[in-house]
Image 1 (cartoon, rainbow, N blue to C red):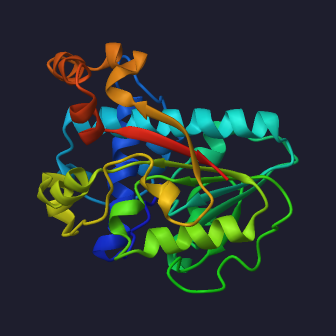
Image 2 (tube, rainbow, N blue to C red):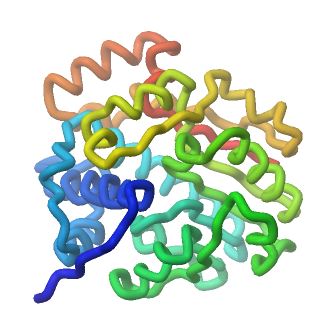
Length: 270
């Protein structure tokens, strides 16, 4: 089989980092997410994944946050089988395949046009693809607005400049009547420190955005109300982390402040 070579700039190259993390998790003896779709997809791409040198903390953290976001999506579409789902900054995520939504759900994978153009070449068609620059006005116009929406933004926050994420959130909640927003919430320190992570340095990305108080988005004039904060250091799946990561994570879990510096899932209603 001839493998596909992708010509990606550093920002878009981050989609290969998370793809690789999910693929590696699926090959563990006790996978957290078990995303075999990502493993199969990674095998079709001509890329030196070894240069990313992913550590167990990033592999397990990526898999765990994806699993918890998947659970949030499944719960929402179970309550709203006619929902719209938006996977913002989807990259090469296989969430639509993992969640297997009901036939009445309209699922949109949204990213830069050149990124979503890759998806039909690489993934089974289980979703609609919308190429859009989330910083530009008008990108929401093609989307239905009269149905409940589940908005997922995994790993997107640190890579949007200035107050772009806040502005985008206001546009989303103004467009849709009702729904939820689920994100992995980076603190300011976690977002700032990303640029020193070896895998991020290997790609050349500088990350910046984050917030500490989980209720901060309630002040963005977007009509958001915090529904849930999950500190993933306390998730039962930590029992499947390899040592010494498992012990370190359990130690961190005793402190809310420290746990917030790790992976956390935030879910808001509007």
